[in-house]
Image 1 (tube, helix red, strand yellow):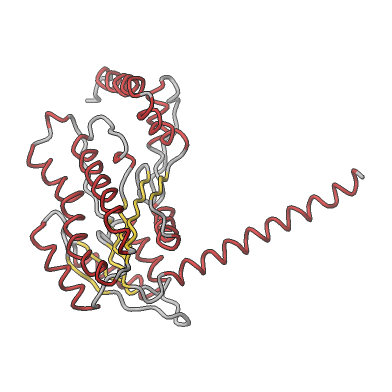
Image 2 (cartoon, rainbow, N blue to C red):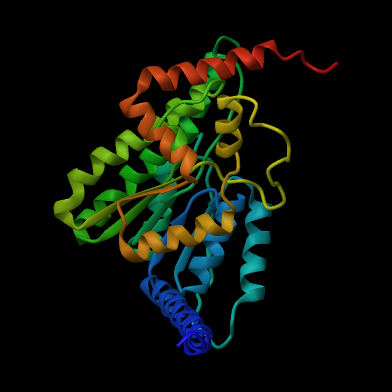
Length: 312
C-alpha cells in the first residue's frame, strides 16, 4: 500500500500542475479577449506601471490612448509597443496624448480630443501619482496643492469629463490605481496620504452613484509600486515593532504584477483590490479596530527616526 502511494504521488502532483497550467493559460486568454477592441485610456503611461499596463492591454487588442507629460517618452513607448506586436494577432496603433494632470485646465480639452477620435471610452485607468516626503511643517502649502492636483483633482476632472459618455452608453469601467496610504497614513507623507484618502473616498462614493448605469468603479491599492531594479535591503530590522512593520510595508509590488492585476480587475469587474503582504493588510484592520495601538506604534517609529543622527 505504501509503495502504491509513493508511485501515485508523483502522478497526482503532475496532474495538479497540468491543471494549474491550463487554468493560467485559459485565464490569460480570457483576460485578453475581455479588452479586445475596447478603447482604453491610460494616464501617466510613461511611468513604470503605465508602460506595463500599456503592454498588457496592447497585447490584448485594446485601442489604447496613452497619456503622459513628456512627448519624447510617449514616442519611445509607442515604438516599443509596435516593435513587439505579434503580426499574427490583431493589435491597434496607440494614440498618444500630452497630458499633465497637475494642470487641471488642460484636462477637458484632452477628454474632448479622445472622444472626438474614438467616439467613446470603454475603460479609464487613472494611474498618475505624485509623491513627496518630509515633515508636514516643512512642506509648503503650494506643494500640498500641487500634490492634490496631480493625485486627486486631476483624476476626478478627467473622470467627470468622460463619465457622461459612459452613462449615456450604460457601459464602462473606471480603474483607480491608488495606494495603501488611502487606507491609513504614514508619517512624513501627509500631503500624499491626504490625496490618496481623498481619491479613494471620491471613487467609493461614485461606485454607488453609477451602479444603476452599469458603469463599474474599481480601485487597486498596492503598498507601493517599486521600480524595476529596486529590491528590499537586507538587515536586522526586527529590533522594534515599527521597523519590522515598515520593512514589510516597503517591499512594494513590481509594476508587472500590478499591471496584470489591473487586467484581472477589468476582466472580472472587481470593485476593490488590495495588493499587500499580510503585515500591511493586518495594519489596516489594526487601524480600524485598535486605533490607539496603531497610533502608538506609528508614533514610536517617528521618535526612533528623530533620534537617529543624520549622516554628514
